[in-house]
Each structure stands twice: as structure tokens, then as C-alpha cells.
Length: 371
Length: 98
Image 1 (cartoon, chains in turn cyan, brown):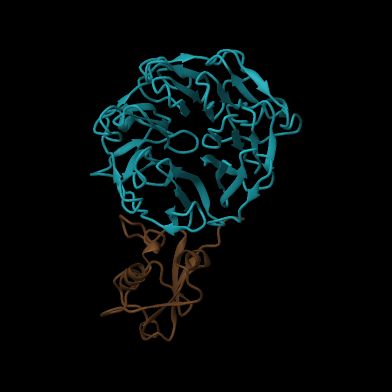
Image 2 (cartoon, rainbow over the protein chains, first blue to last red; image 1 turned 90 degrees about the vertical axis):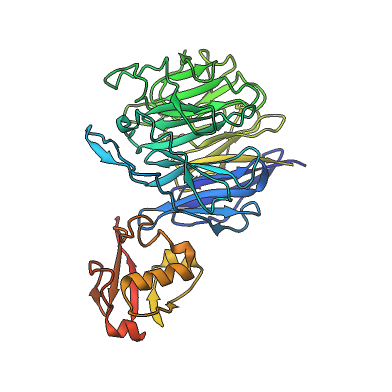
């Protein structure tokens, strides 16, 4: 019988949660990399037992770990992320130039087809690639060296490259997103990049429709329609139907259009999920009610999903990498919270149950659908 | 042999318990000890000093014989007792937070 394996990164370690296809009973692993921040864990689509993890700690810096047995055992891989050439400067919060400095790897995106190839999105924003199973890393430097690079500035969480989407129909096309520069696309495997932010409007920057400078929180794509992209921006939920060439707002009737994660149903490319959060500074659910919102029309019209989720006294957040969908026939939706809960819906969001309720703050949730 | 005491998270990472020993050819200096340590335990690369600059990480300090050696030049000879292996070279993670 098929099953699922959740890869959960938290403030104090990683966890693996497993279940069969019913997704009712769960086993929770012992923590791994205990005490370390685990920003992200993700498995290779080409080999589900090949996992990559980003592990860091303020004292000791960045580590990358690799597993070849589905997370039973791990081994340290390469952790040298060296910017190509003279890194130069970007803008700091106060508008002054600041030298590019590697801080941590936020997101690891394994290749769709090659188990030893994996991309890393890092802070300060850059994209790295490994083709030897994360032993060595090389920067795809044309992105950071884009002519707008010196004008990029950090979002509140740091200047992070947090989203990497590979086009399954075109191996040379990759989308990335940076807080707070925006979305960039390459059509030549990273040799060149261009910003694709037309249609975004950010009232908090000097030029609200600038080519770059938008605080994009997350992108999502359905593999059957790689030209359709969904975006949760700092404010506004957006959609592009032309591979990022233009964007339009689809926030519709959301109670707030601020949030972090966004996901697409595995079998319904027009079904989208977000978690609205109050802001600018609160970052808590409106009215103390934890609600996932679902649109079945590709945006604009949203319905709250509340069954099984706390509807009073709830003040957790859901971070940008902390939502995932499985590919079982009845699509499973998962998200983790800063309060340490991980929730599952085995019926595409209609009802929810907690898998665990007392983990450290959850940074990321990925799911593997296993045969 | 030079004795090196690592903080607990790095002992766990290197899969060792207690002190480790490294051999240094020539004069025992901070740089030589750390080079030997990283050669024997490659997973420690980048965790004690920055890959690119080789600067000690801000929340790491070096002690021996109850002396803070953190800001000594990396090529300065370590105390004789460390070089002889009668005292350990201690890599200390700052107690920070609260």
C-alpha cells in the first residue's frame, strides 16, 4: 500500500513523520540534528531515498547533510558556498551598500531527474548547484551578477533565495524568488536571468511597480501547467499565465492577502491553498482562527477551511516552506506552524487533524508519496 | 600528538567522544592544529572558522592552560604544554542566549 513520508525542518532539529495511504495513523521519528536549525529537508524525485537537509546554527554556521536511506542515517556533505568572483555589494535595510555575505541555505531543491544534482537557495541571495550529491557547490553567478543585483535589499527575514521551481517540460527553465528582489527566470540553465515581475505592485517600495524590489514570499506551480504560476507576495496573492511575463492579483475575498506559503492541489491545477496572516508586523491568524483558504477557480474566489483547525485563541504562523501536497488520489495537504503543530488533511483540505502538536517551531514541511 | 577538546555539538558532528588527538608536523600553531583537525574530520570544515576567510567564527573561542588564545595570531606557537600534549587545546562555543 502506498504511503507518505513528511520531512519536517524545525528550529531545533529535523523530524520524519510517516503514514500509510490513509494518513490517519502516524509515526514520528526521533529528532535528527537535534539542537540545530533545520531550514529545509527535501527528497530527490529521481530517488526518494536520497534526502538533502540544510542544517545550521549561529555558532557553527552551515552544514549540508545527505541521506541515502530515506533518513535512517545521514552523512555530512559539502558546506562551502563561495560566491563567484568579487561578490560586490547589495543594499542594506538603511539603503547603504553592504558586502554580499553567505549566511545560510534556506532551500534545497533536488533535480527532477538526476539524484546527484541539487540546487541551494541561500542568504545572501544566490543560487548554487551541485552535481555530485551535494559534495561540492558552484554558484550560478549570473543571477547575483544581474545588473540589478546591487539594488537588491533584504526582507525582514534576511535577503534569502527561498523558492526554486523547475519547469518539468523544459529542463533549461528555472524560476527563483528572492525576498525582497522578486522573481527571476532563466531559460538557459542559469547562464542568464531576467526579472519577471511585471504586474506586481508593492506600495512599500519607492517605485511600487519597479522591475525588482518586490517581497515575494513564495511561488507555486502545477507540473502539468508550468506556465501558470501562483505567488504569495508580502501583500497580494498573484497569478501568472505566461511563465511570469505578467501577473494579476487574485486575492479576491481573502480576509487578508498577506501570508507566506502557497500550494497547488496535486490533481487540480486550478485549486490553490494559502494561509492568510495579519500583518505588517503581527504575523498571526486573523481573529485567533487558523484557517487555510482554498480557491477552486485559480484564485479570486476563496473558501475558508476550518474543520479540525483551532478556531479560537490561535496565534501561530505558517512559514513559506511549511506547506506541501502529496500526490495520492485523494490529495493530502500538510502544513506546520511556528507553534510546533503539523496538520494533515487527507481530503484536499475539507478536514484536518494534527499529526504532532509539540514540535519546535516548524520551518519547513515537504512530503514524499511513496509506492 | 596535540589534544583537542571540542564543544559537544561538534563532537557529535564528528562522531567522537571526549578529546581528539591530531598530529602536527612542525611547530604547533592554531592554524596547524585546526588544519590537522579539519583534515582528520572534514565535517568540521567551516564550523570553527570561515571557509573563505579562515577567520574564527564569532561565537567560538580558543583556550589552553586557562588562557584565552582566541585573538592570538594564528601562526604563533601554542604553549609548550599544548605542543607536548600535556594540556588540551580547547575549542569553546560561547554560552550565548538566555
